[in-house]
Amino acid sequence: MYKILETKELAASIYYMVVEAKRVAKACKPGQFVIVRAADDAERIPLTICDYDREKGTITIVFQVVGAGTQMMASLKAGDSFHDFVGPLGCPSEFVSEDLEMLKQKKMLFVAGGVGTAPVYPQVKWLHKRGIDADVIVGAKTKDLLILEEEMKAVAGNLYITTDDGSYGRSGMVTQTISDLVGEGKHYDVCVAIGPMIMMKFVCKLTKELNLPTIVSLNPIMVDGTGMCGACRVTVGGKVKFACVDGPEFDGHQVNFDEAMQRQQIYKTEEGRAFLKAKE
Ligand code: NAD
Image 1 (spheres, rainbow, N blue to C red):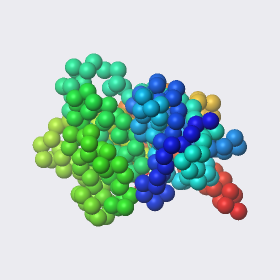
Image 2: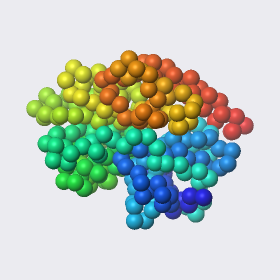
Image 3: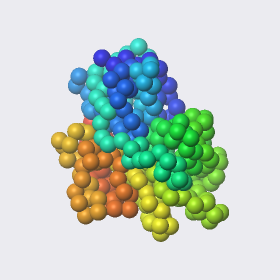
Image 4: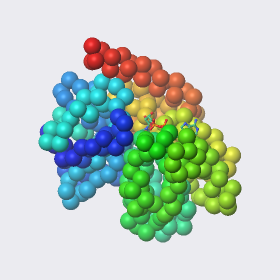
């Protein structure tokens, strides 16, 4: 059993939990994910790791209630336990294995959208710990939905907050801020974009025009997370890949987003039905 040490609601329906999972904490790297189950008969939920503490043996997860499984997770309190907490799964972010001196020469831009801010955080923190300060754009629909601002501020080189409705920070979507920064003369060698599929699609459309290589994380299309169900099948550069075992990170300019989003819609409908059934 994996004990929950701390839990809080970061924003409406977005939860933060620190969980005791010594073996996962010992081995995990930025970019990897875990699969959790609140109870024996609960749905499997793949979640990108938000933070880890090797000494304390803890993993931090952030999730949004979108269906029956995440609703059950949200009902858990500190002192309760997860039935399963499997990981670390998937491939770590590519830069983790790059030569550090080469990496220091690169100017990196991270683009985080909504709940996707959680998986961006450990990557920026990993770089910061090694003396590399990346620029970070965090986008949220409104000020109330912005998460992890202080945490991100502590590890980012420059942090740019943007809200769709202009209620905080800059006004508009993350793509607007990318254009503005580049327009102001900022140069980036690589962009990492993590957030809703629609955001990653449009960030990639823009960065392709800007000739800026972009990595995306396809965690949102995962269902099973072990390569068994095939739900996260995605075409990358004309080849079929599984987000869970070949990813979750891919070259965003090679991803067929429309196909991946169509498949994601099918599973969302299933998840929605399960949610309504559980509420009856
Ligand atoms: P959201 O809808 O609030 O969007 C967040 C930001 O993305 C917006 O503020 C905007 O700046 C940007 N965005 C949205 N649509 C855009 C568009 N068409 N063009 C340009 N930018 C756009 O996000 P949310 O509700 O927090 O997102 C939840 C989604 O994030 C879920 O689908 C979840 O699966 C996904 N998610 C992804 C990951 C990952 O690893 N990729 C991790 C956690 C959550």
